[in-house]
Image 1 (cartoon, rainbow, N blue to C red):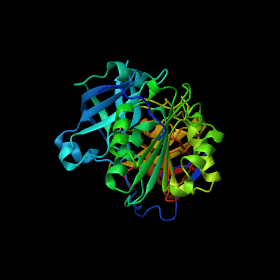
Image 2: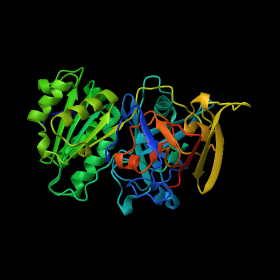
Image 3: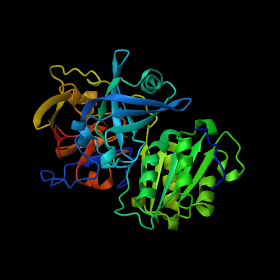
Image 4: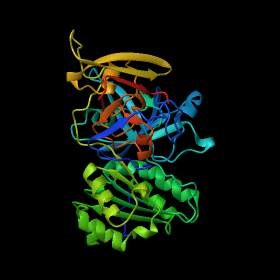
Length: 403
């Protein structure tokens, strides 16, 4: 297919909290209400069915799902999977959004993600240059709540704002919304440096051709001049407010989906809230927080418990088995890191407070959570925590990964 040009202009919400404190609620021993898209994350080895170039530095990777695992890989539009591989002797895990809409029953048997090469990113560089059809890699069951809460889409207007590889989950969301109702509308603002950096350019063009009156597609290029000044240059507050005035009046929108770097997502959240959009109508997802000191590998950061050390006792349940580990107070160790020292099968992926894979419920004690870009406010109220970001503030903490 010939390459297209860009054409003419046509989270419950996660909360980023610097120092959130989670304490076991009085009803912690009870059963939590189910959260759509949440389930116990497990890795399975899948075969790579295809690797398709998207741009010079990104690929779409499709995995074959065997019949016996199809139920494990059911997913909602906007969810992600974690990939695990050993590269140069080191285990690495990274999360990538699913880029295709949920399959019909007759089409099941595969799952696809898009991987963009990050500057200095070992996993993404390896995937772009070394991963081929026929290879086998560990793929975690789908996770995440970056999906719509609407029961039906009749007459609904959904807006997505994405930068770079942030388009990946919005591809699935846009296709799902537009196919679900003849009266649903989707507006996509997609920013990149240049037209050569646009992922899924042909697919977006095909989607526009299929739904010309219900899909509004606005490409914004920061390093390439476009005919419309509003679509040229970086998206700053002034440009965003202008877009809300002339392209996307907030009163016409039912849900907002933001996906990209922290600075853009935060700018959009703050601006939308300042013009009266309720936070419950804004969902966001980050691919990275910009921090590079997160623990990696299956054993966590080395911590030694010495005789006489003041310790906290961390008890956790995983797959019905209870395990206890002691952590020196002076080590300021996260629950995830301590758990990995005795149970390498504890679930995690990004370890940066973004993906939510390490989510558990605190039943006793309290913790301080350094960052949270994944949990919804109602989950926090019910005692859920991100174990990769949670540090005990009491002598004993009991958490449950199985809830």
